[in-house]
Length: 88
Image (cartoon, helix red, strand yellow):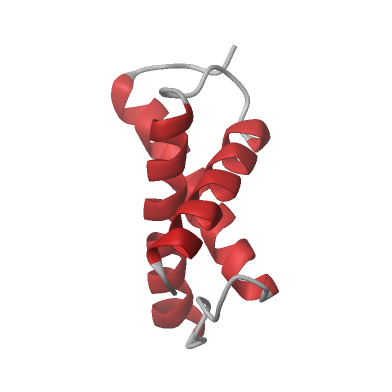
């Protein structure tokens, strides 16, 4: 995937992850995009290690979005746990 695709997936996945997790999330649009991009990489890595699937196939594949959102949710939850921010 190209850098523009990573940014688009990151922005959407980060926003969905912040919407799915209760409470105030970290940062604004840039942090949301970075969380989504990192979440996509984490989700892809976990998908390949645990499930043995190639989960980052391209912008229009469902597996890309599921992996990115799942990884992003994990990152948001880890951030809140490590920073001591509880859900309100």
